[in-house]
Length: 478
Image 1 (spheres, helix red, strand yellow):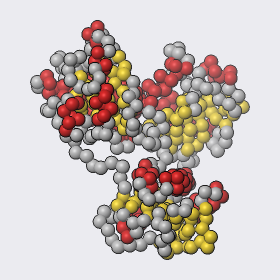
Image 2: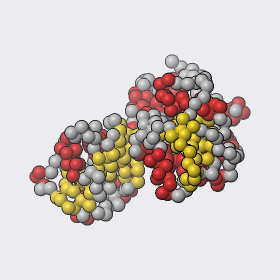
Image 3: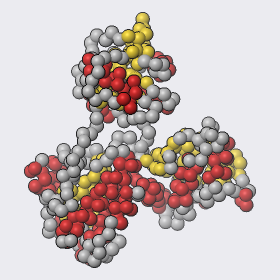
Image 4: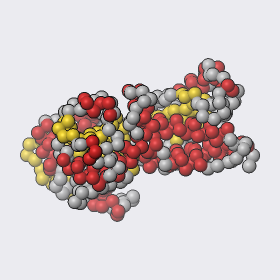
């Protein structure tokens, strides 16, 4: 295999592995790469899904109008052949997460992926991109000697390692390199406990991990004798004891190896917390969310509904921006309320000057949903069969509404009556936006008889055999 083709193949493998891994971790994701193998090489672009489109002016400013990325760089020839990277931080382009580096084998590389709006934290994703930077540099360094697909398999299943690396960086900043907390056993224990039911119920409550030197600062209610402390690897035992803290302000305390006791009150700043909410949970570092977990895997999602499509539809409507923002906030509160109570519902957002006439329970005096008491009542009414009818005045006009209409293309029998009724109704009433919340599917936003999608299907344009275009050519082709 010619050297250029071989290196193109290495890039393609890493790019595909990142895309697949991020899709499992964060939902459908795109990945792109900017790189220059040698100091005098032009910047090249690997962007098979057009992730970087829309950022051409900034990329032109950084890499074509200025030569600082090349001229101000250290001499990579003096770097070690393996294991040494000069890190380049996130470029903070809107809607993107990026990380890159310089090495002896690749003068410059910068990886990009999407910043999903429901991410708990960007830190694990940045660590993932950082590892991709290391692996591609290593692959380029050994390309003349042998070829391997190992980077693809490593990066595709890197979620747990990315969470580990993000937490470890935080511990090193807070405590230093002498931290005695071992992250991998903690992550393994959290996932194992999350999969362990007790009398048919999934775990609830909080488990906190702190440095052994900080145990003296914990406000303990109960301390177990040192020789009788359960190992955190014994998921079944920890799960039983977790019953003592569920639905309370108490929490279990561990120093990373065993369960020390039960505490209540203020926690030390430097801590790892696992919060169990039945079928899912959240992992936090220093009180800040790092990721969620469910079904034995870590995810970037904060498990809040993605309402980006709804926000865009309201902002582009004829509503006053302030009114659109208020309606969005009220709708988000109703959606999140339905998700927290684990029931489905349908919301009809009627943007017309005169409310539609819909079959349902009409209220003589519409409820102002900006009143917290009325909003709470609307959350309860949303549990009933039928839709809530909300006007542009942010008032509830009807509940238990029946949505009907003629058959439309794009109906999906697997989605059930709520979804397909929303398609039919919105196809005949263009002044309405329908929000469908299902207990087992993502939230759907429907308008004009179609579901509003955040991303169109894509067709990869980068092939293994072809040389990626230079940045200047890529911009001119756009």
